[in-house]
Length: 173
Image (cartoon, rainbow, N blue to C red; front, top):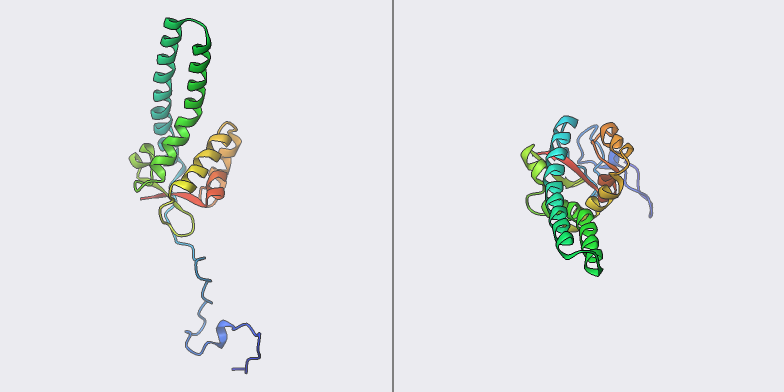
């Protein structure tokens, strides 16, 4: 063992208490937890279940607004109802995923049905509402371009760009 000088960085092989050939310890807070990666088919079915639920609500809302517009006729209120519909059609999917995936459930209804959950990529713990909102917002913006779903299919951890930005991933329960 060499004598150390001030400013030298300790090397794992200099630790007299380490097992022979032991890997150096990873920096605190940067250890990645091994989590089971779900198959693409399971994720796709969960996605379809969520789409059906969210857009069933959006369709009921659209029908209700259409009926109100017919009863009231054209006018300022008609424009307000159009605005309410537009905000709801965009906001409902984001709110749905944020509230369910950020909660203690850690999953939307589709993910729960398929035995999946959304976790922090490095710790495996609950995302919380902030990261869950970021994930839902970015996914909502990118979902219109189907090419972004190829990233999920091709990435090792089956992460979309929204998962990478929010430091999240979908895993088996």
